[in-house]
Image 1 (spheres, rainbow, N blue to C red):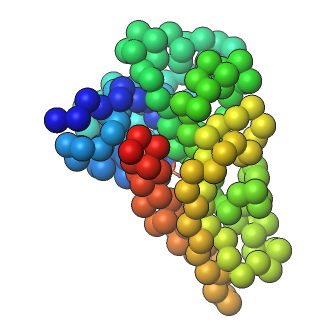
Image 2 (cartoon, rainbow, N blue to C red):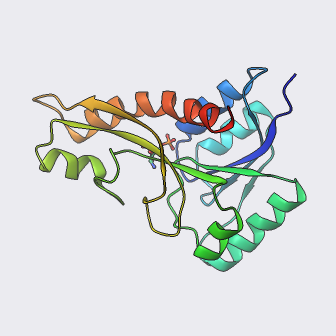
Length: 187
Ligand code: GRF
């Protein structure tokens, strides 16, 4: 049995990426074990997954970023967490927090970075008339969506593509490359 790295996932919403990581992390040789889920939204569907899979979870409001990070850090330290995955986490972490976990926080973004950093990625991808969009897993650095890229997956934008159809298409790929990226980091 591989000794799994104690990890935490930060979420804000549906948690479909969280779900894909949870499922893969049950493989005996997957490198990480999710021992904590932190949400900055009380209504995040991902919190239900935490319950379903018996993973400890915490809600901390991010209205006051300093307090959010202090509370999160307290839990993370208490549980000896060594690795953090941001999965649909919609808040920007402070430079101070990120530096504490240098190269130990990763994120998934629904575009082919460096294209379309930030919000409304699908809308902007469609507007740009690009032939492809996709998703990227990257290390988190103090500059938004700019850390070193770990893995990307391209998807073709079809003729009648809508924001929703593109979002769905990309999400399917996100669910594959997030666990793959984690494997590739620790291989
Ligand atoms: C995903 O597209 C992710 O890339 C973006 O927000 C969406 C959240 O999806 N950051 P989920 O919460 O994992 O379902």
